Length: 176
Image 1 (cartoon, rainbow, N blue to C red):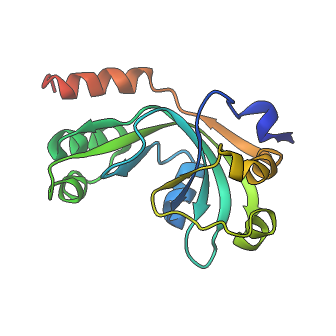
Image 2 (image 1 turned 120 degrees about the vertical axis):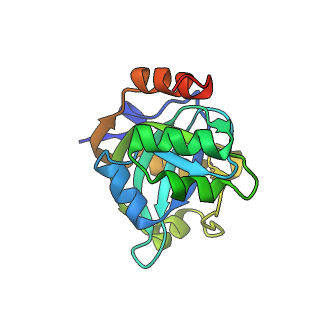
């Protein structure tokens, strides 16, 4: 097995810690989920260690994501329906209160052997799992980032977005 820092990590991308519910982590790990929905988020490309929330909490996933696509509820729901087979009404309702939101294309993902909150706190005692995101590539988090980058990974999934971006372009241009 290879370490994240040797094969997957890009030192030129911001590295975040984000949290997701267990069902979504499982869907990303199996390649079913390639879009993350958020009402607001970091706008640029990034990579992230993903903390699974709940009783099975811990980092089990590393992802690389493209810049977010911000738009209205109808377009985002159509994109989610056509690319990820998600329920149009559910996505529309999620974004409709402000008629605004974003999708985050997941370009790559890989599994990491579970790292518990206790293990994280052994490296960085004051760590708190964020609701949105936390930058790991800051001087005060260097030890934690180094610890995480030295983890081994498997199950690398690369999602090809070329055709998907063409479809999104047509949806946003009203050609669908």
